[in-house]
Length: 210
Image 1 (cartoon, rainbow, N blue to C red):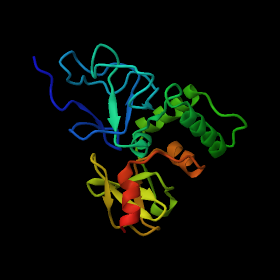
Image 2: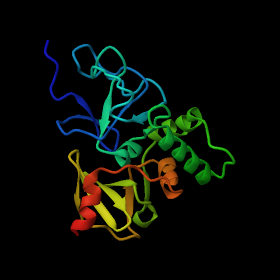
Image 3: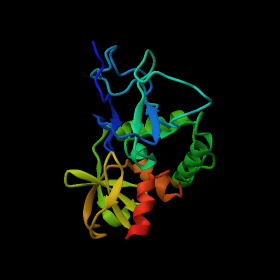
């Protein structure tokens, strides 16, 4: 039986998996295999609490997407991955992962950075819970909130409308207006503590176009 094309492995900020042809800038996984031999997804959306975001290429390793091992998922950028609850991988993105853990420690008043498993337990509980309703002005740059039937990325100079293909200009909302924060609370705290996510080039391109 032919495999579906495109595969349903592109991640939206709310963690949903979609079949779209747009390519991402990061790959990730949710701890195991979520697909059948024919490339369709099972009902499971994770196999462990360790949801990670990885580089697309690492040490010349080659994989068959949705092969015999874990299910690869793909993100537009790191802001999308963080919103969906995926932290940086400690193997292929070690420098980013250490910076992330350091920001986590600062955000939570810890004297030493937490272990991956400690962060995963907190993040998994947040993924299973409802999203937070917060003031727009309380969201740090890099966070994503829901706007109508879409998503908005917060930047220092305003917001950008999110899509699988990239970002585009969008009107902001008043700082006092309540919005649904898609990025989990712990991820927002890490961003507020200084962690700088790797954004899709279209986010920067819009800065000079406005």
